[in-house]
Length: 66
Image 1 (cartoon, rainbow, N blue to C red):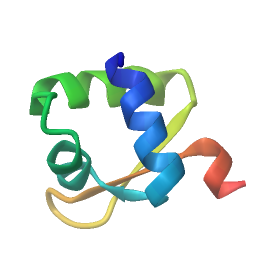
Image 2 (image 1 turned 45 degrees about the horizontal axis):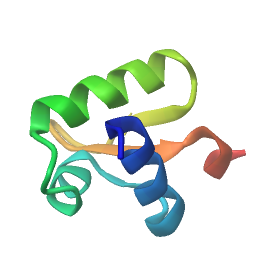
Image 3 (image 1 turned 90 degrees about the vertical axis):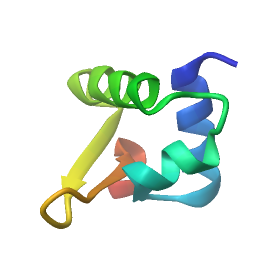
């Protein structure tokens, strides 16, 4: 399954979650692969990252926040 599809499916099932949790729940992907996919999807408006702390980010599908 392509990286973006795996992330979207995870967020559909679990709802918003922290970036580190996305990496943990998708062990076949590296942190860099997850970050690049989330960055691209964020630029396209498909996911919304939100900073919760100094280095903690929550990722949500844009549709989950409407």
